[in-house]
Length: 98
Image (cartoon, rainbow, N blue to C red; front, side, top):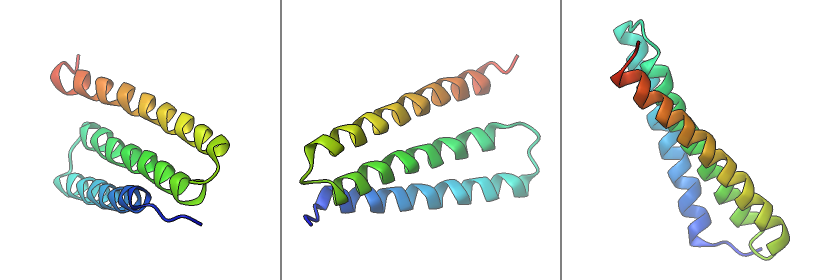
């Protein structure tokens, strides 16, 4: 098994993003916010974390198998599309909530 530094970097980044999303959600709950801005922003953090962990684990376990690695990249790009759509919706919700 090949352990690439990119895979380790993606996995560590995903852990950091998940921790930041969790702390952001906890801080938003403490303020008692009524809107869903905190939930949307935390979901963005968790989405990026999920995308990075998919890339990291895919590269960690399938670095020598280009066939499976191709499908891991396709999955990662679909997650990025979902995150992009969620980010656009979040920006519209924040700047024009009506």
